[in-house]
Image (cartoon, rainbow, N blue to C red; front, side, top):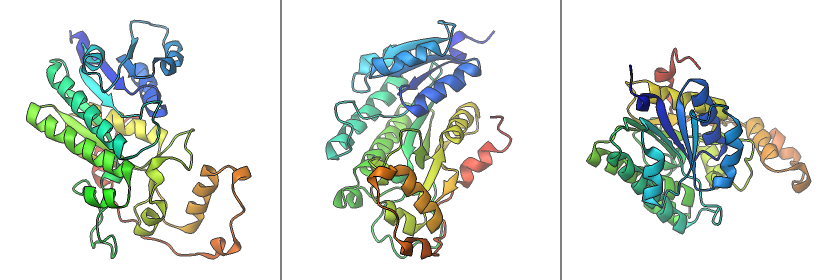
Length: 298
């Protein structure tokens, strides 16, 4: 019989749309889940998801508090990690980049010290891939998992989300390799969650992403499938660019803009907006993930 830890996993932060959806999918697949969040109040809704209290345990866990992380990881074989800014500082700035780096350091160090942990799925972002000096002209080959955003470029143009994700992911990879932690990262596009607004820090530089052919989005259901696939497939490794839709023509861009800005807060698009027929070639590749997910039972 497999040890209990072989089917026990931790989801952190479990209070957001991605985390809570992951918790539900894992429970459906028979896992025991440690749902961890720094905002315990937001986790109360999860407690009604599973009638078996032995299958779902809720933890208050601050990524800047090492001991609270180790408590949540105890007995787990895996961790699904994503960083959510603290409730008292929701905006991304240079300070938040430092916070996210410290959180990544604590998480990987705690995983290294947890003997039962066999795999970590680390949430990063496509913003940690796409930003570099001399954006134009575009490269002759598509951007993929080998590319990293230039931190000096991010600082120069105050792309704080990209800076935070790049530095945090690099910190996580350095620790994972040094401590022998089996880690994969998901570099996701703009997550199309129900609470998405124009204020999402991912959207800083959206016009440039669009023109460069790297403005891509990620549906919540597809995201959860990708996380489950990279966790359960023993052949998964390294970074995975994750998206299932590319915004590369005007109609798509307008549709997204109308979704992000409430009708009462926006003026009708000018007629000239609808006359723009340019199509920007997609310049980012998710082939590595697509190959892994062939035949994955969602």
